Image 1: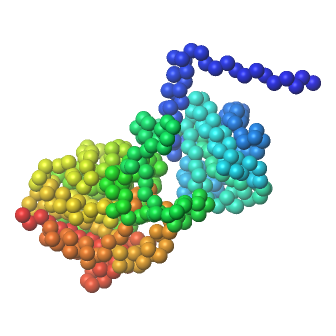
Image 2 (image 1 turned 90 degrees about the horizontal axis):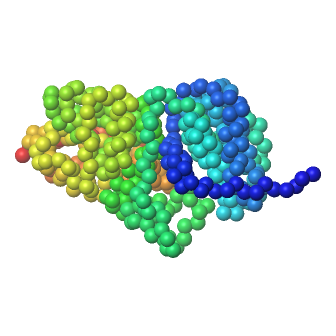
Image 3 (image 1 turned 90 degrees about the vertical axis):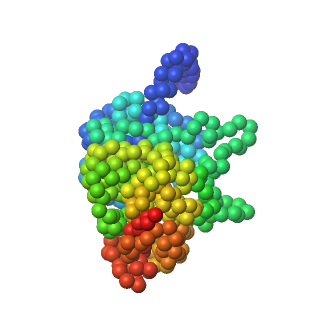
Length: 454
């Protein structure tokens, strides 16, 4: 028996060839819209075998990959995941597993599987396929039962591979500027890209999770405008700009109620939506306006503006939309230039609500209107926020703290005349029922239409 080991393959000596390959690799981007066409079992096997060339901790190779091609099983995987529709429509869904008990220190076995997963993604990309890696896969016990995975193996995530639909967003999420997330010989990172945590003597890793993070800092005043802008510019890309999916939990039925506060908007008017997240409710705003209205979106981050415009395009909004980059609370608009401004559940996300309202007052035309909605501190929702929600990690929409409805009314009336005021939803989960009278001050959302009088 010949036990000799093959010599290593020589490194690429032709630098231009290496640059071509690296540039091709850098084009890989995540896809959530697949056309469902089949990939042969041989090619699936070849992609997985390519992944096995990745290093593994102590070379144990204690990983295992279960490829799912059966349509009914993919539908089941989608249901278990809680709504990852791409699980159903990809060509192959590969569950990433490792055997528990070996090389757990510093998550070395987890790093091993991650390396193999990315190697598979590059293999698929170079073969002309699209991919997306998913950590949010749902109840792993149900997955294990479906696939017969023994309890000694952990299911770490899933990899989707397939051909993208012609309508799939063909864009890569932005990467940070050169040198921002790496340094030499010492840790150096811009303050804006270092998100705050509550002061503590230590931050034990296993005490922190998405569902329970005792160090999560939810107060926008601690974050400041620059860090909120940074967060919004990158976090929004956790969801693809695909039509009809990935709505924020703060929207839902509430959006229709918020839009009912819009004034009558004349033809040719200028309307600006301030600090939306991802463009879903901006789409509904656009659909509620006359077709010749000049619509603008103002946000703190270029990345969020790009994402929102792409979402609007996929949602079928044909009218041009102005992208307006804010500088902190400052709106990049002339005085007395806008007919209507919408701030749907925005003030609670800002470090300085009063300064933003000052800007709204500055840019509105005399007689112009603003629709302002805010999640209410003194409501069932507010009670749940402080009792439960703030135990979690800050969501991708950014840090926020509900504001007291009466306090919001005070800072609004100091600048505008209130034309209509009501609450939306007495529950904590966001139905769209409008609440009039005294109960409006204990509704989940306080809503106002205001006008500029001078």
